[in-house]
Image: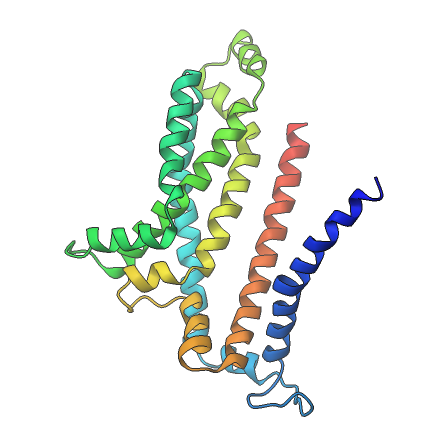
Length: 261
């Protein structure tokens, strides 16, 4: 068994090179001034002060959070009924429905977003609406599949017991099905909210450049402006928000699991 543990070493090295080191560099850039040399580092909080002192940047952050929250809510409102409908189908039809939902995900997200750009090009709606359409389209399958998996794991005897006790369909859903499917909903929220809040190419392609989010700011300061220090500070702020969101959803998932038990 000990000899097999050595197989983990390449993955540890890979994670250190491509995950840990870049994160450390982002932290270093975020807390230092522009133009520093390796031996003349000057640490500062000016990058974070610049972000919060200018009202434009917090407004962009709030717009990103608002977009991610609304996208997540829409995905729940559409995804839950779809997942519930799928769970009631015959096993062969369920397999076909899962295939139809996952089939677009086989294509790169950037290609799918370019396709929607062509579809919505002459549609007389605002750039914000187009961004919402692209967001929901790209992230909805994650919500549906998580809720669908949670519904399939549900013990049918619990529903039968609720019916035997005189509960109608609505009461059975409210008291049995919905509480037991909450872990799937929380997992779906995690898989939708986190990529939505940091997305940059969907707003860039569908928003026409008028709908700027935090992801677009980070891309701009790294690629166009070349201000890696400020871009790293924004990235670090977003990373903290994502970590807090993951902590909250994990806590909610743990509490819902305790209620289910």
